[in-house]
Image 1 (cartoon, rainbow, N blue to C red):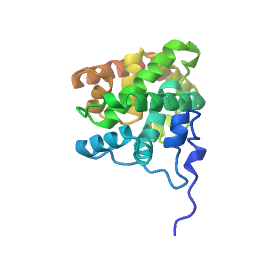
Image 2: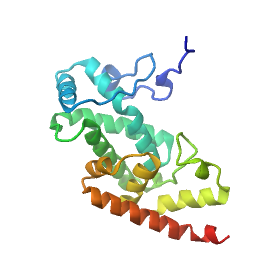
Image 3: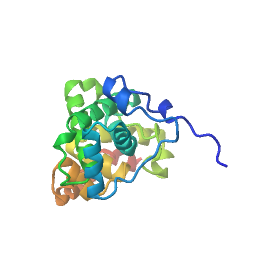
Image 4: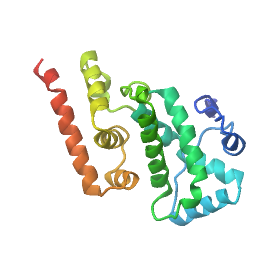
Length: 216
């Protein structure tokens, strides 16, 4: 018999938003990461949420909250601020859910909303433009980065933070969080080839910024 699991509410405490507190507060059981499933199932889930089904609201929240948090955290670099962005993202997701038409996967639409919330937050307050901390949550980029020289790690963190936003988002989503190019393209509203091109540019800029470390 497996041992006791950590209460997921300890990681994602109930949001102060009254709607979410009533409808999508995390259960006391293990947090489930659900497969979004076929499009018709997603549309059915959305319909249930829009009809006021609290269980459906919780299912939608539980299915996407982990990845929304990770994406927000990787892009803002601060765990507390990422939690705020998760709350803001789901407030917007639920308030705008009637706009979801099922043309793309629900996860794609959710990530698109999250990217918009993060971008707006960064424009509102430049003080949240912090360096990305690869060691704060796992999995991180790879063992080479985790075990790298502290100066190199600091340089890498600074270099990623210094990337223009369109390249930084693509790099973080693909090389750190493992999104595919079709997922990135759908979430950011560009062609797959554009996503690949942005990643190529991002990697090139990072190599250039990290050149001093290669010469040491």
